[in-house]
Image (cartoon, rainbow, N blue to C red; front, side):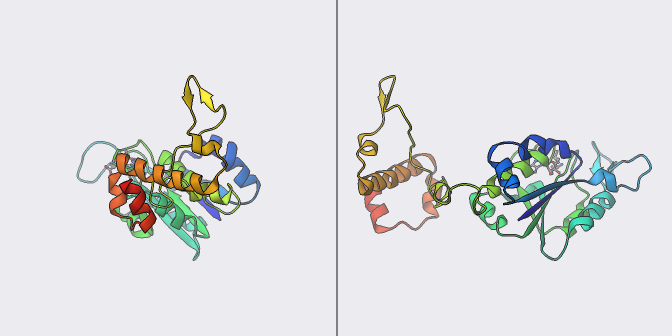
Length: 234
Ligand code: SAM
């Protein structure tokens, strides 16, 4: 998969691309990650990429020309273009899984007061990472890239993301590592038992319990199996 982030702050992604799992994914050619600085496309003699809003008001609006020219320099028929904007549909694990299937994903990062409205006609979808306003699209693009790169084949162990929160519509069960007792707090007996069927059942029950307690909305959108219904009743 190829990911292109169109931004005026490419340096924002320096530590992202050189750290931990993402670094390994890039070095292992699981993902080709690049940034394109749309300031380098501006035809303005002062290298401006923004201008004052028509109709008046505070702040500066990103102009069409540099962004559309930058987009055209990397886009082809396999590209899927996403605008990062608080006005977009909320990002989710399901969206991450879908975005991970595109051959070439292009993410557009805004800044200042955001994009000239006409830029919206050039994108395939708009994504928000939540109901709050960031200074720029870079942290949002980083969140999207991180969530989808870890889903690409060979980036992390297959079954480690199958159990992740949201992957199966539930929050993940509690996890523990050594020691078996820390400051009087013991790991649940069943996890030390080596009994795989009991461990699977306990984990499913805990997943259901946590989800019901913290995110009951998730259960409303999920069809429960007979076993899950019974475990929820226990
Ligand atoms: N005036 C715009 C509005 O009210 O919709 C907000 C502009 S914001 C200060 C600047 C840029 O940050 C946006 O163009 C977008 O790229 C990015 N941004 C801010 N909040 C975001 C969010 N929740 N999700 C995704 N991108 C966001």
